[in-house]
Image (cartoon, rainbow, N blue to C red; front, side):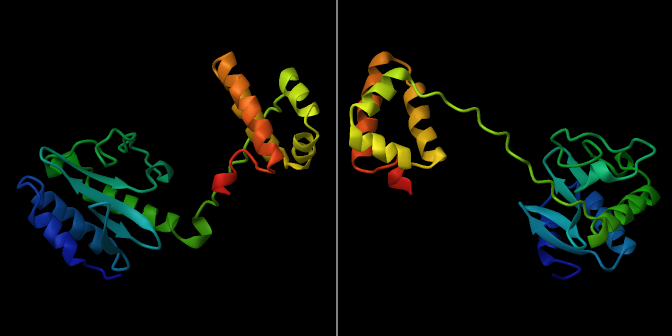
Length: 202
């Protein structure tokens, strides 16, 4: 990836007139802060990267936005960074250079963002542990149908817990008694053929 990307030049050239000088200034400021930062286009917008996304800018018809990828982790004593508000940036809607923080403040944010992307500073991805699913009790009428069909009963007993749950969810989520009855009968039929509930997709 190169320091300057011609696609960013094209992006600035086709932007609204009010946005061109702001985009150009921000681009220059980012690269002046560090020659290690490269640029690219992601999701149609210019992104600046150093070992991962650092910041991005986006121009629209009536405003533009400039934001930091890890804005919530930046030290912001002046409370200049705004919560995400749909402007694709960290500082609200920008229409003139005066809407941006001072250059020295932006430079500090850029340097902070670069440090956050250093391997030793990256936060490990937190793996979400799924809450255990509440067991589904087997309906009495379905249990009776299973008991009356030895083949289906045998296959059901061999199913994994997830396959058993698929059948029980399908049956208990029926909205009418008629639908429930049809599903129970269909379940018995499929089990006698050694089929799990979603056998077509497995």
